[in-house]
Amino acid sequence: MDFTKSKELHEEALEHIVGGVNSPSRAYKGVGGGTPIYMEHAKGAHFWDVDDNSYIDYLAAYGPIITGHAHPHIAEAITHAATNGVLYGTPTRLENKFAKMLKSAIPSLEKVRFVNSGTEAVMTTVRVARAYTNRNKVIKFSGCYHGHFDSVLVEAGSGPATLGTPDSAGIPKAVAEDIITVPFNDLDAFKEAIDHWGDQIAAVLVEPIVGNFGIVEPHADFLQAVNDMTHDAGALVIYDEVITAFRFTYGSAQQVYGIEPDMTAMGKIIGGGLPIGAYGGRQDIMEQVAPLGPAYQAGTMAGNPASMAAGIACLEILQEVGVYEKLDQLGARLETGILQKASEVNIPISVNRLCGALTVYFGDGVITNYAQAEASDGEAFAQFFKLMLDQGINLAPSKFEAWFITTEHTEEDIDKTIEAVGHAFRVMADK
Ligand code: PMP
Image (tube, rainbow, N blue to C red; front, side, top):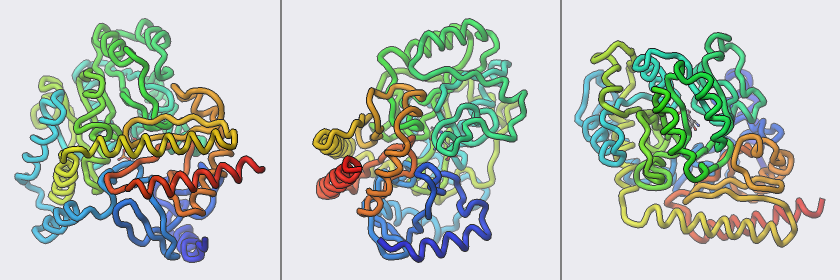
């Protein structure tokens, strides 16, 4: 494949934009560096870059694009919003409509608030929890990523882990000291943290199904035990569902397991591809938020008509019968194909999959926590990533990320992908 124009654009970008990219994950450091691909346009499950190479896309913009690129229903909603005025600084009826949709999909949301990103959503839940409990400490799980605000850039997965900076510089020591990190799926370690810090803990921040060191499900009873122990300590449970909301079912991961948190943060899918975040939860907790309470959170762009319209349109598509069954069937087909191709040439891999999201880890053993994901073979992944890209398959450039199937992928796309995987594995096995 020829990437001449992408290379030129990246050189230009390096002169003007720090690192050439507006989000570090796009710099391809997780696959040993290289030139990011500059996309020109996209439709459904497919991408075309500036050099006119085409790809089947599994990045899905790191998750939001579950209904495929440029879905006509979403495009129409955005166009309509654009021609009506994109921002008023006043409430609109779209906000009410969307809030009602979220609440009816996720019953634990007694009240919601819209913000502009997943980071903002999680950041505010932490602030509100601290305001509500009058405590400061937060427990998080190692390798989980909750955005780029100070408190959570401690043992963070996803981009920070990929770049080797899970503990960001520039975070005041006092802030980091209020964050306690324990391994995911390790109830003994969690109990130890609760026993030690219990009466100082404001909240436990949980990705109920991890998406940031690959897709990792909680062990049976893990989430229930976390809920019970957290509540016994007088602290709140916050689910970070920025990746998981509307990913595996119409609703959230909390419904997959039938466990309710006190607060939930969302983003990605609920914006239909436009910037968005939302948080919500129990009414008495949400009443801490201004203008009702003393915890301040605001936003010029919050609830803007374009994001509301795109989000509503996206959820309307996801409400259609059979959407999640289709994602699951395509996911199962892809998983089976990948495992089959690996076994043909004896490449040791494991696949974690739920519905239309999966992660391929190189190496032996099952991945249930961050340490295991970290130990998976990054060099093998980097080689695999490049071999896939060369065959027109666009994956996230990091061993810690997921592949996302969209409603627009077809069995043909999946089968082509499996063939490409087979070729990549054969090349890797020959080396
Ligand atoms: N929480 C989780 C679980 C995420 O995966 C992300 C982004 N990958 C965020 C929060 C931050 O969201 P945003 O990038 O929209 O700020």
